[in-house]
Length: 136
Ligand code: NI
Image (tube, rainbow, N blue to C red; front, side, top):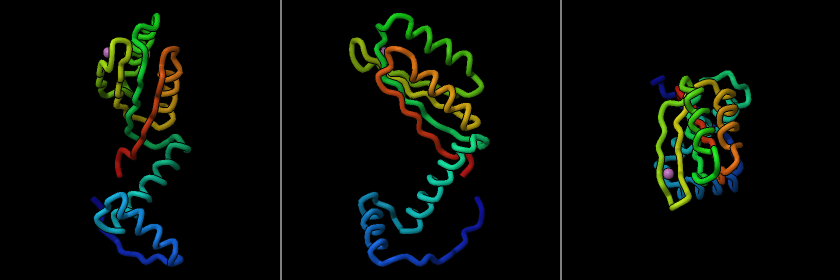
């Protein structure tokens, strides 16, 4: 953990009012906590674009497990990317429906590539990648 530094920010009062409502709705303990999280979110987004930063993330997939070959394709892609995939959680949602949460870590561009390959398979209903800085 690095040292905490204080800095002041000038902002329009109506914008500060909106921000305070946001902090209350999102239940942040302090404005500082909210600002820190917003800064981290923004910098993480920038890191994705550059593709060079190490990030951690989850890919949530919802799919029809009766779709021909889908299970095989999912399994093969995951076994071909064991350097990026840390863990997988599987939940059987309904007779035909499965949910998988795949935990990933690695260069942002590689995570985006594997996420695109996985969620692009036929039979995937939803695929959402969420990434966070691996070393905040
Ligand atoms: Ni299942």
